[in-house]
Structures are given as C-alpha cells and as structure tokens.
Amino acid sequence: PCVHIGGYQLGAHYVISEPLVSLINLGSVRDLERVVGEAIDPLRFRANIYVNGAPPWSERDWRGTEVGIGGARLVVTFQERSGDCFDPVRERLRQGQGRIRAQGADYLAYALIDALIDSYFPLLERYGETLDVMEQQVVEAPAADHITRIHEVKRDMLELRRALWPMREMMSHLLREDTAFIGAATRPFLRDCADHVFQLMDMVEIDREVASSLFDLHLSSVGLRMNEIMKVLTIIATI
Image 1 (cartoon, rainbow, N blue to C red):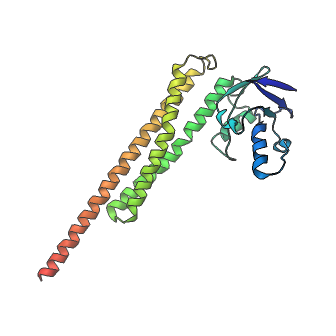
Image 2: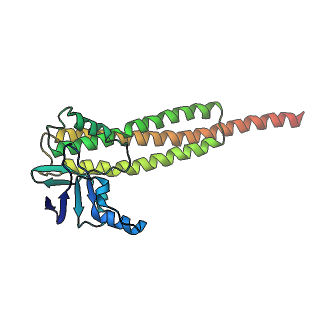
Image 3: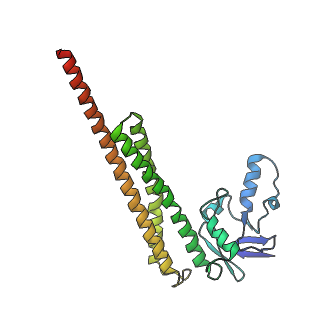
C-alpha cells in the first residue's frame, strides 16, 4: 500500500510490529548508487517505509518532523550511529514502560528532547572533574602542557555553548508557540526541559570562567617560580 504525505509517495514494504518505524529516502539511495557506481537494492535496508520523490539526503532535515500515516502519528528522528542518547527511549518503547506508549506523538517528542538534553550532563560533569584535577596540578607543579589543555577545554566549552544556544531558542519557541501538535498535558514537561537547558548553559559558562581563571593562575604560578629562580641566581652571582 502507498500513501502521500507532503507531496511524497510512501510505500510500506514490511509489517510494522514494533513501535519504532524505519524510513528510507529513495532519493538518497539513488545518490549513493551514483557515488559507488553500482546498483543498490533499497530493500537491503529493510525499512518499514520508503519515501519516493524527496531530494537526496533531505531526510536529515526531517528530524523532529511529525507525519501522519492513516490514523498513526509519527515523530521523525535521525540516528547517525548505533548507540546514542535515544537508546533509553527505544528501550522504554519496546518494554512498554511508563506513559510513553499511552501518550501521543507530542509526548514522544518530549521524551526524545529530554533524552538529548540529559546526555549533556555527564559530559559537563566530566569536564568539571577535569578542571578540578588541572587546578590542583597548576597549583602544585605548573607545566608547559597545561596551557594547551586549558585552551582545549575552553574551545570545547565554546563548541558546547554553540550547540546549546539553538536548543535554548528552540525550547523558548516551543513554549511560546501555540500549536495544536503539543497538548496542554505535555507543556509542563517541555518547561522542565527548558529549565534543564538553562542549567546546562550556566554550567558551560561556569566551566569557561574556571578555565580562564586557571589560565591566569598558571601564568601567576610560572611568574612566582621564575622570581624564585631569579633570587637564587642573584644570590649565586653576588657570592
């Protein structure tokens, strides 16, 4: 059977027995054929739904898009590699835990957003522990490679800030926008996600400030050590 969504023709080739659905863009498959120079059977990907008529690789922009197939509503996500922050959500769907199977697509979208946001906390905690260790090393025995490591942390914090800032704007837009796709029961959960994003932004700013202070501390420690060396050399030269 085939249906049309947004001007695209979709064909269902496998029985959907799981709450997760795999979509393949046939335009991307054809472009892959062009690159490798060989014919590729789309059925080898064993997708549930094949989309025909969409531009190649346009599925990368479908992330977060909600589509309807008959009476079913689906939230489109994109998995770049096996094993990501969405694995706990998939496991909850498979086991039918919590309310995720009983709620609509808006709650599923919240669960995916929440999983993505929560994945940043362990990363920032590790950076905080790294900065604590570096601070102790800078105070006790400053070394030349400390400057490089501090710059690496500052650069990583800048990249995290660039990743979190659009997410912060997205959450603010979702909470401000009065859309029929998000029910009133799901909005409190999205507000909780927005609070977590603001908390992550604060953690990033704190780590950036700590890294900057470590840079100044390293320069001060090196300067003090140089002064001690100069004192010793002055005493030796006087004798």
